[in-house]
Amino acid sequence: MVLYLLFGVIVSYLGGALFKKHERIVSGALAAAALIGSLVAAFELVPFLMAGSSAVVLFGFLPLSADLLGLIIAMTGIALALVVAVYSLSYMDEDTGTNKFFPLLLLLVISVLGLSFTFDLFNLYLFFELLSITSFTLVAFRKDQWDPVEAGIKFLVMSATGSAMILLGVALVYMNFGSLDLKVIYQMIAANPAGGLWLPLSLFTVGFGIKAAIFPLHTWLPDAHAEAPSGISAMLSGIVIEVGLFALLRIMLSMGASLPWGKMFIIFAVLTMTAGNIMALTQKSLKRMLAYSSVAQMGYIVLGLGVGIHYGIAAGTTGGIFHIITHAFMKGLAFLCAGAIIHRIGSGKIEDMHGVAWKMPVTGLAFTIAVLSLAGVPPFSGFMSKLLIYKSGIQAATTVGWAVSLIAIFNSVLSLGYYLPAVGALYSKDTTAASTKAKEVPFMMSSMLVVLALVTIYLGVMPDPVRSWAAQAVSMLQGGF
Image 1 (tube, rainbow, N blue to C red):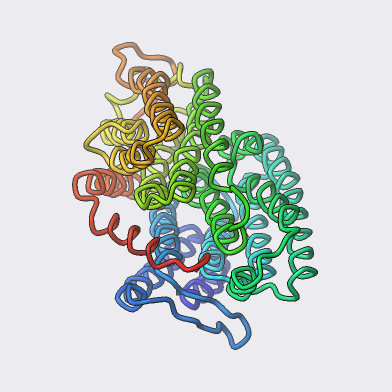
Image 2: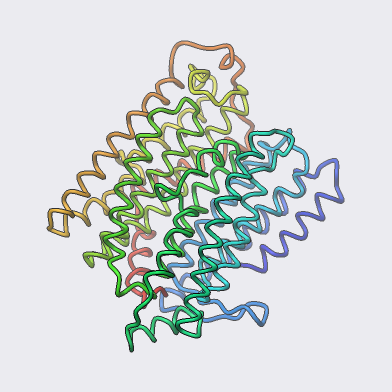
């Protein structure tokens, strides 16, 4: 998988540089081809990893541990990036330097793959640095405009703060254990429970919490999502913030047995989903509304994992992992639809989008499917993943379990308070000066909206085998792997 992407980085950049007049098409097509090759290679690994994990050494010096859970996250990232790459062939038609955009997108995916499979804490840190650098560059890609640059700098500062905490945590772990191998550390703690873990684990929680946009560490996210090119907004919301949580999950499963981190996840989850939804209610910009919605959706993921770990309920951890997958596609779809609308009317304000759906029927319908799924309305994918999370709280058969499930359901209903007005504005009979310019986007963009809409419907109507893969991946875990 990685070799396809590395080769794609090189040929995508060189192809765009050599064919300057057609750099966007050449660079984007080569990047898409590399992503297709990587996705095919990932599918070929599924039967092998369903039987157990496999240790590999990449390039002769980089040890990785491929397991089914990591593969699911990696495949989600690759698939979403492929959709973004094809979408961006048309979307980036007015941008320059696109022979750098597509290679950076591939480097971002490489960092996601590294984070999905690495079991060494220092390598984890290095891959997160690569993720941060590529994400910052892509957020601020439109460097001739101040708002994207400002958002990128804000993201960089907060990301650097999180990275410093993670690096300090890595140093403390090495001082205590003499190893950075999470598998070795897990065995050492199991044989001889060690004290003094609260400080490095606290540092990891804050460091990765910033990257995962968990409340109150989310403040970089609205600006970054709103100002980045819409394809990158889809990647940030669909996979980048989830990978931050995934890395924290790996660490906690390996090192956190002595701490009540499942309960901590539940507390953070309730705060995150509630704060995210309340802040989304006040937004006038469509992309900022979706950005705060991403904060709320992270709350559901954290809740499923927290309830699953704290109470030992498989439906919770399975629901949390499954919601990572469903959220990637439905939120990716929402951001790409928002990008399509803004691309046509030149405004991101919801009040300027009245009546747009009548002139952009594919985009309007796709956006409606995306936000209904995000709200957990059946029969879409968001309902199926959220249902497992609700179920896990009820299965806990405790006051706390019932309470958090009811809070999660209430938050889903609350989210309709900003999703439905946005849909209502798109289908309004009134028009604005901006919306009169609307027309359906080119085939490359609209076709990707249709693909994601179909995936969102399919995962709602027929959630297996993806849901069963997630359940099996969780059941195979020993420590964090």
